[in-house]
Length: 95
Image 1 (cartoon, rainbow, N blue to C red):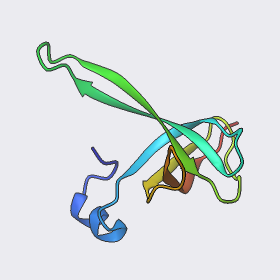
Image 2 (spheres, one colour; image 1 turned 60 degrees about the horizontal axis):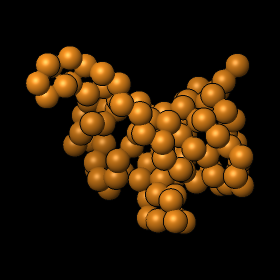
Image 3 (tube, one colour; image 1 turned 60 degrees about the vertical axis):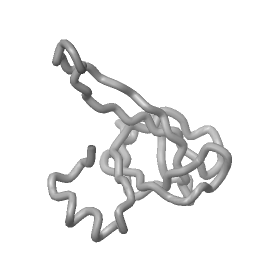
């Protein structure tokens, strides 16, 4: 599931890498943020939608992000044992 409706345009611009939008839940580590990505999934039998959350670690080169920021992250090569994403942009700053 991608954030933009046009999959072909997105895959061409990013080389087929996934882009996700989420909220920063931790920025304690140096140059690393933890992003909570929430998505809605239909139940296979009952067809009722419910939310699923996944936390990913992303590389933040300049330590720009704060807790509560909405950010866009992109897939990357493995940067550490659990870090597989990079910060693409900060969509919205927390108040």
